[in-house]
Image (cartoon, rainbow, N blue to C red; front, top):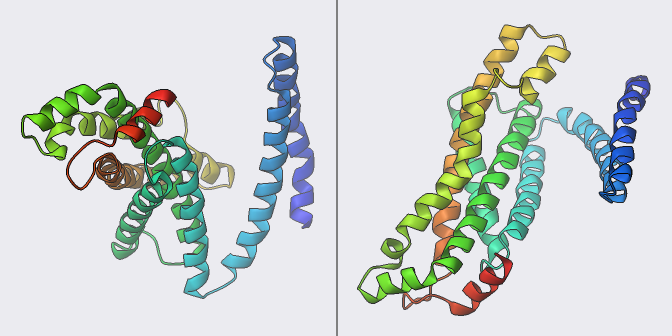
Length: 263
């Protein structure tokens, strides 16, 4: 608790920048002041709460605490990505499964390969990065595929009429959706260290680690995020397109109309 209080003057100093942002928003009549204040307050409360929660969990040795925290992360991420994919039938279910696949395969690989030990202080922060990245990729894939199918419905139906399977009829849309989801993390990996120092690396340096130690961790993080993006993006792609077809391989017109209205 005392350590938290020691940080309060620094937090207050950083809060000055928020005040500047509020002033700019008011000056330019952007009308984001209320949302900005709410975001700042929520971030403070949520981060302090999770800080105390992690202090407790890191002191525990039982596996189920790790599984509980990771499960909550995945469920919240699934709800968030599902909202981005609105008008996709069963969007939250699709998003949750896609994020789960990305998290399980990526985290499982890291543990089996002994990149990280199966301990709360390692697994939970790493899982948070993986789940957050998978959530973003899943949301992008679902929204892009939804929009493409709604805008190119006639093209897809023509392919179906000529005897193509649903997978063949939407193959171009599937590739574009997967590329849309994975491109940001690939571009970020290309420029890491040149344009910005990522969060994990910066955090380690600020905590006193040597730059070379921080670089090693950041390399692992970037590589694992590419893997997580591939797993979640691929799963989201194939689950999403199936929601727009009936068992008789026909496009579901009502879902596409809703998607078009949102596009």
